[in-house]
Image (cartoon, rainbow, N blue to C red):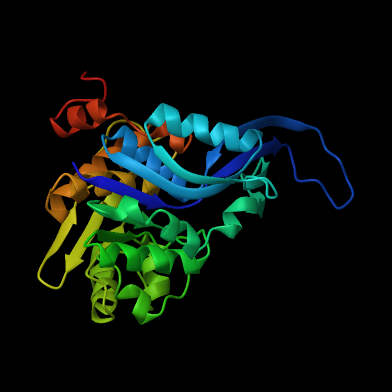
Length: 311
């Protein structure tokens, strides 16, 4: 098992549910409130660590209660933080308002300390890349830090993974730093210009991105599985069902964390993707994102043909 380095964001998600949205200047009584961990980078680090990975997480949080919550979540999962605590910036948070009747939502995001993540965080943690196996990042933190991380990993012979979420325009010189790009259908379409609604469409989008310099693409297709494509290979890895679907919020992060573990353990990309599908397949049977990530024992059980917990 080689070390996995994740660069990303932690956000505290505060969710308010009410019978309807308030109008301007109005206060309404809510039906429920929930506080939980968010941020794609943090979720992916938790998924990888719980699935057996040796994970270091590079980020910034505030010196506040939400930051304390982040440290507790990482400690419980086995994530080793390489995190700077900011005294002058709060931990990132999201205010999520949900209309209980329609399910519609409105969201305000205040990135706080996460918005100050920079190339300096990569330089300060350069020693972590020595002997590491996989570097994983997303697009929630400033692009400067993403590029610095990809370049540092490449310079140290570390495999690079980019989960291009949220969707953004990326220049070819960035894509050429990526060994494994892991978009969902929407993100693959945004990056390639090819409409993606099937595995065949995903393969066409992947061809475009490979021509722009990406090493290999894994397009996550929900219940249809994952389309893996490189210059030499194309495989559709089926989704793995672990039971009734409860919530799909963290499925993409679960897959990315699991895929990173598979690569770090020396599996072929296709086998690593199957491992990632198992992590995602279990995660969707539970509510929450970070809270839904399975243990290694649960993943091994489902891959062996059983059910999480060995039943």
